[in-house]
Length: 273
Image (cartoon, rainbow, N blue to C red):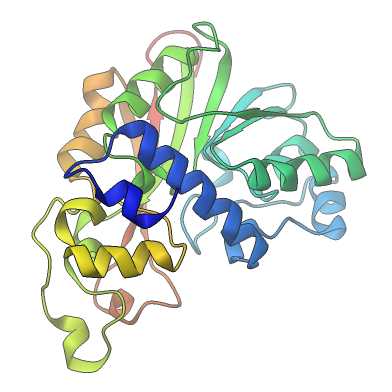
């Protein structure tokens, strides 16, 4: 799908955005984006010995206590392909399912799983539609920063809640919406100039010419969700928030002024936590 096709409509459908972003992420795999590079053999071997860490956000490792007991746990890596977190969690003893919109990203997980004989199952699909999974299919949902690639985040939280067992956990990373108010390509004093009204949308906030250039470069479409939808949406879905932290990023100039990423531990009431 070319940029012009998507721009023919004032507001693209979920189907069109998902199709475009699938193509974009497959392209990022080919270009060696940092979130498409699978873990090393040494990292998998260390995880089997009990030495491991994974991230929901760019830099800060997730506290081990957030996971509970991993041995035999059924984990859904939600929109978390790329051969990074899924294989590590499987090597640590979990039964992992990775669902992602990008076939090339899923191939990274399959590659590592085959090489090391890991219990990793891959599913091609959308994070906001988990209808293939029955209620209570998983003990833990691991959802790294990725819901910025969908227009509506609320179905993501509702579906994650549904597929968890009572007492299950969701570990989620997401963007601070303030991140989207600035021009990511600006430098110096211009980097501190507020540019976009929130909540942000690549489709509605950029000029047609800027959006055309963005899509022609093969970059995914992004959407900046409010904290009301990111945190309040988890609560409305039924979750109870347990813990959270903020994180920064090394390659973004404004990261020295505020932490642009947030991670939360949310619990589904009932059962044993």
